[in-house]
Image (spheres, rainbow, N blue to C red):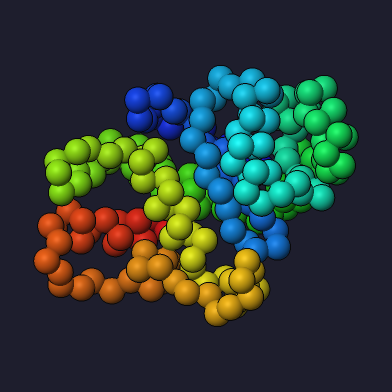
Length: 191
């Protein structure tokens, strides 16, 4: 687990950070929009509502030494859940290399959206910012081919890439408006 911070506030909730949670087994990730100012309790609720409720209780969690993860609340929660909490060593990000690589990639993509104030308009003219696009970025990353996961780890079937997965998109003519045709390419380009 780690954070992407310093993002331009997005959505009605003015999210300015993103919690990245990597799964070492499947090489997939979850991107959860949040506020930099959130407490350990807020962060644990994000984790409970978005990860534990859908994926189950992890056996091990690796994180940096952010006070939100080292608090008495988190250590007690992990003790109750039976989860081992491990910390990466300061100035040694290789301890949690998968999360660090994911974090760098997501920082690049979200940085692009934020740096240029990138917003997309849908076919109804509604504007969408990085928060709205976060699930599409997550989908693109999670459906991309990884060298160690040739099959879908949830079903054991052949991995089916989405049209916006890294390296799978070709420009196609369509009856869709130009901005919606460009969106998958823009996400893929960021990846």
